[in-house]
Image (cartoon, rainbow, N blue to C red; front, top):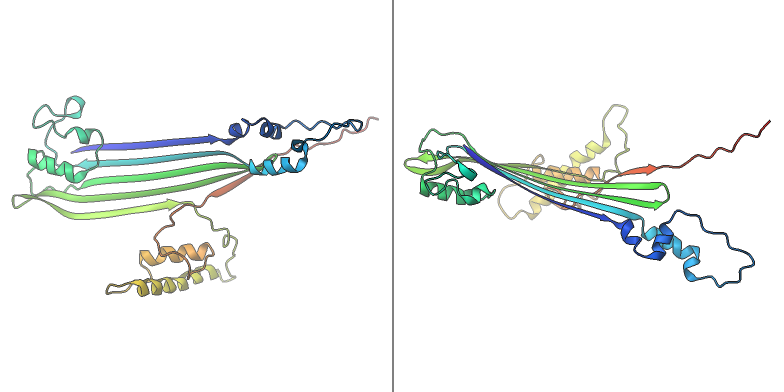
Length: 289
């Protein structure tokens, strides 16, 4: 067996507070120092920048303090029945330097690798090889932002999206030719979403749930919408994946079941949030005896 893997990671960070502070006026607004008291005898004309209203407006516009983003793509391929013995730099010293430079650099082009391997006789000729070729792919996106609408009050927003796919096939000789048997493609998707509209609905006294009952009924509505747009023969089942996912999302997100998109998963994740509020409690000193 031989295998490779490939990982690509991109990171981005934006410290917007530093960007705001490039302006002297905005830096002054961000400063925590209390404003100086105006001398009543001072007849100096008040500047526009000294008024409270512009400061309040700019303060709200600068509520977003930082944004962090991370993207990760991980791929791997494992191929059983590989008969060559790689040595230096992962390449064999004969038979056209198996498994080839693209493969050792993480190439995931399975069809190209199999074609080169067949041409150079890298694979076993056994017709009883039932070990599957396996390819895995995982894509992750994470975005985090910090919002500070006013002093000591911070809101942290987190959006996550993960999509994983797997592919397997049995690749062996049959009647003198290499053939593919039992190809299987699977996957899963995880993403952050907002269910605040239904999160606090309670169950009934008999422990039944009106929300779940709505979900069961919404399956039929989604099924009918699919069948109306289906130009092929056959119908969708109420428990099919295509029906369950939009019915679930519409029900628990509190959306109109007749307007929700007929897609397996939302295109964009919605952020979860965490609120932090910190303040100092002031206690007046007790009077002396």
